[in-house]
Amino acid sequence: MSTNERLVDATPDQVWAVLADGWLYPLWVVGATRMREVDDSWPAPGSVLHHSVGAWPLVLDDTTSVTACDLGRRLDLRARAWPSGEAAVSIELEAVGARTRVRIREDAVAGPGRLVPAPLRHLPLAWRNVETLRRLAYLAERRAG
Image 1 (cartoon, helix red, strand yellow):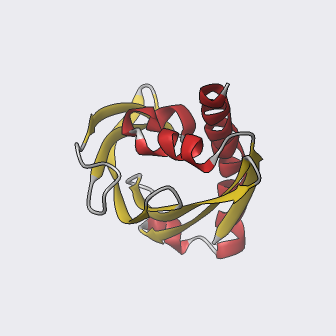
Image 2 (cartoon, rainbow, N blue to C red; image 1 turned 45 degrees about the vertical axis):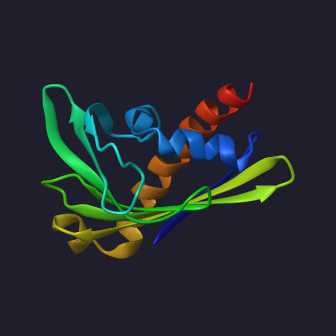
């Protein structure tokens, strides 16, 4: 799996508040362009975000679902981005004083993306998730403001 981490100047509760607001998903997830619907139970296991991915005019509707959730500490997702496939994503929060270490692990688990050799698919995932974590940190730190 591709793994990235970042130390965020916000508490785990403040970071979790961003993750728990499904409507904010396209603000911090690179590639997500808009939200269409958020299940009322988000981020409970089995809940789904209905979003779009891509850049206009090549925007595709897809979903991301929660596979496991440890409130305030860990969120495991199954992110769909067909036709490229699906990814397993795990986001972990760890308190470090008044700050939070956020770790994101991601890998392709289905579809054509899975056929790319691991070292070749992990490099773009790592680049993408550096920016994803930067955006997540920005939102959480602004809330901590």
